[in-house]
Amino acid sequence: MAATDRPAKFAIVGTGWRSEFFLRVAAELPGRFAVTGVHSRSAARREELAHRFGTLAVGSVEEAAKQGEPDFVIVAVPWPAAPEITQQIVELGVAVLEETPPAPDLPMMRALWSRVGARDLVQVAEHNMFMPAHRARLRMVKEGLVGEPTSVQVTSNHLYHAVSIMRGLLDVGRGPTTVIANSVSTSLVEPIAFGGAFSDNPDPVPRTATLAILDFGGGRTGLYDFTENQWWNPLRHRRLTVRGTGGEIVDDRVVSLEDPRTVVESVVTRRQTGMDMNLEGFFLDSIAVNGRAMYRNPYRPARLSDEDIAAATIVERMSMWVRGEGPPPYPLADGLQDHLLGLAIEESARLGRPVVTATEPWADTIGPDFEAGVPGES
Image (cartoon, rainbow, N blue to C red; front, side, top):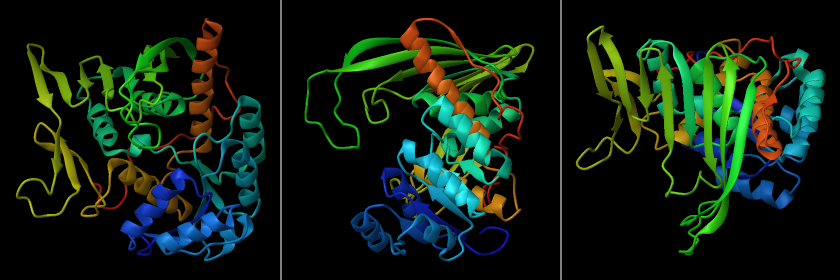
């Protein structure tokens, strides 16, 4: 439970795929989360979700912001509509957790910042650095297991999500970044189509693969490698590499320097209950390296995927921030910066030349504190 001993209360505007993540974790963890209402332009859709998840369907954005006095409102609507709805809720004096990205393009990003940035009421639901494996890797990096981090390779997430992981693990700010990208046409069998349904198609389909190097300055770089629909395609492994001055983390393996003459190789282990004769239930318990827990699941024994755990964590962190019990989970400035660099990747690939991002108005604000946790995590 949070320090106030009451559930984190939130409303949701939008009833798409991402909205169901938040509704699902609230249903699984009723002692920690409470949904005060859900709103959508489609009355049928909001009534359907309200019935399925046992919450209240509300008829307007204003009602969502006021009904039941939520700590904040999650805005999970299509990109073009998100900035206006976010501004509307902020003008009511209510905090917003806005889905990614905060705005579609650079002019709209700058406009959103000029309208709501100074109010300090908007955070972004960028959940990737709250996923258990990344939380564990971040702790290894912060404890100096691989020395000073210098490079991160992400082959799992697209654009702004991948950038968030790079920036989080490298601890880089929001300064100018040089991006060099290239996209190529390729073919790949897709057993599972976007959305999770089996395609039943054994033939390769055309896809675009993009590679990019991001030079953040100060000797820190990111390597981006993504193929369309990689989120769903089981024929492409996910890879995450963190290179440092004294070793590297490659997925679930670590190599580091114990002393000047001793190189140590370690395996990151995941304790997952409910397998074979384990009767504890089915949930992630912890992630460890060298016999030490790097991450403990604060929501055990709830039956949640890693994505659900990350969604629950950022929602609880958001509630703690609104109540003055913790630092901001993921400021609007960082969501904007991630998307700025994602757009630069696309622009560089399209133009066939390097793109250097400018210093934007949101560059010098306070960043996220990923080391802060929620009750039960440490």
